Length: 556
Image 1 (tube, rainbow, N blue to C red):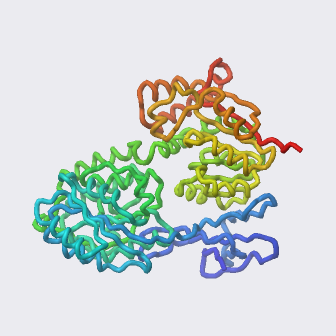
Image 2: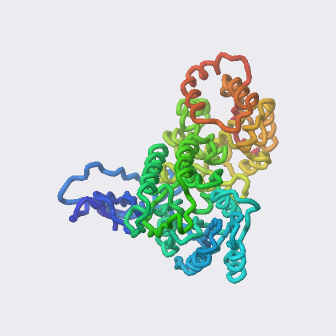
């Protein structure tokens, strides 16, 4: 039974009745204490419970909205709490440089550290061209333990480069960074893994400053770490307590999508900035710390501290925090006027049951869902997760995985029984676009409309198109002809964003830029009213073309 925790006493205000969906929600008046995670949590329980309780001693300040089922809703709203993913292997990434004195006991500790039941481990050890016997020790360890895989850099490149090599070689679905010294205790692995295994986090930082024992060392190192952490938090809008910690745990899929660049210790502020830019769910947990002195072999110096200042600024404002396509989608969030213009250009063709193909982060979805039952689809897990967190509790929204390259996925469209398919800036990413149109024809009901917006004019194809995965910019009548070949009936075609042709040619064709930045979209957003006006005045083709088609009724 669900409860709204606002005090010690509660009373039931909603009784169970047949045919009525009940909502279970928990509001925490005081932060729930979690000894393993230094966080304050708002817990939202399952939406499938039958009761709601509030305190008898005080009124509910803001009543939660209880959504009644719609007769048109295909499936009930999804729970905000997502199913817990099952992980099979932890990859422990170890960068080694001249650690002959500590490498052997460190690896023994890593091998003996307890892991949750069912989780295998592999050690990916990268020697950064050590000049002592570290490489020979690593080879002997690999010979004795089959779960150890060793690699050697051809020249000394730094910790960041070694970690990147480890990421490229790992095979696990979880990853953790481990130093090759004895400063960090592998016995903390279970605690570090807990928020991810429980489905609450994508990334976990181990903090040396939130409650565990630690060795007393250099005052100015601590001051420097606090200053760097504060600055990174200000720029990234986070509240980490230990920026420079070694222990960082990742869901491997998330880690592999982050394009890391730093070669040395700049990888620490780089990771912090890029997980923030990617909106990854991040937790901190306390860890023990047995820091080394310089006499013991500590390598980081004041020069790395000053370099970290530069990296904090560099990676906060860099556009290389994800693939170019995701960066472009994020930038579009800075242009709400442009998104609404795009929506307005197709609104007259929309029905009441809309399936959106390639919803991304929901820039258009937020507008589609206001007036219709919608099916939001994508093939990227991180987008689906974000869409569910934002809107899966609404009874007119369904979120589902759909890979347009996989014929087996199209059943979600058929089950939804859509009257409109919306596909904006997606079809150009698919090499065999005709196959997609044919699959849609096979699963759609008769009279269902299809609204496609695609980039236009092959002469404008640029380096940026290639970077974001465009196979083509469509030529005149190309999409219409393919729709007719697939059996669809073309109803109309018109151009969109005529003024954008000049801006695109200057920025992407002439200047050969590889990404679009948020400041460019902010300027575009300010000028959108003017561009909308010019679309009606300019006697020319647009940057994009909109084609509306439908599935014809069967001939008797």
